[in-house]
Length: 264
Image 1: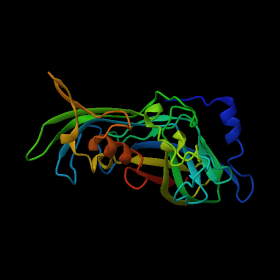
Image 2: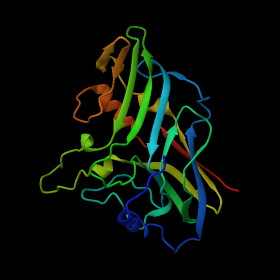
Image 3: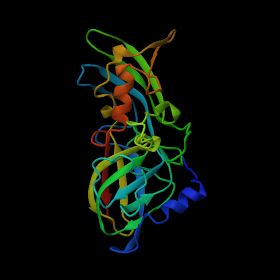
Image 4: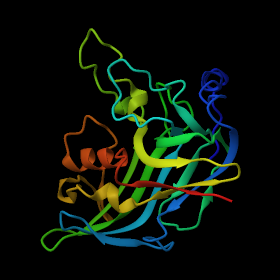
């Protein structure tokens, strides 16, 4: 999926990559399911909660990939989602990744950066504009069946967006920007200690099993008897454990996502 950023947004990001402290480089970017796990067909695994899950569809949409000179642990109150001067590399084109396929899927644009040190990375789960109030892009699209020794089967699907359905009220009325929606769209920091080189390739590897580590499928609402189907709710106001667990795991920087660098 190729996305076009609004011109103003692109202009704001134009200063992100510094021109000092390293040579400018162009690099390739691609993504796939982790080749050690997936073979292009359904993926079957057992979760820590004892559910045997067979995934038949697992797609995640990444609107942009950014590499950071620093390793940001947490965003502070009122801190901007776009932090000028911290980026060592950027891929501004979006891609919907088939996480069940081991075949590398190239991002539609080349990446730009410097050969200075990279400490971490972040993914933007968006259809284009990180700061948009509304974004109907489905950033997670999964389907499969879960069973356990005592429960199931639970044929399920989920189509998650990050728009008004994910707004979190400010922690303090005096700090109206303390929970901006853009922060819900950023997965960070993903460990990636490296240095870019001209013509190198950055590979994003996705482990779809990690999205379901904490999900209790017995908590899913049934939406159909014929055919039998359960569905995750695309709304952070849902009190269901399954909905919260899947959305939290989607944004977990330490579990589903891994980056590798290949140099020419």
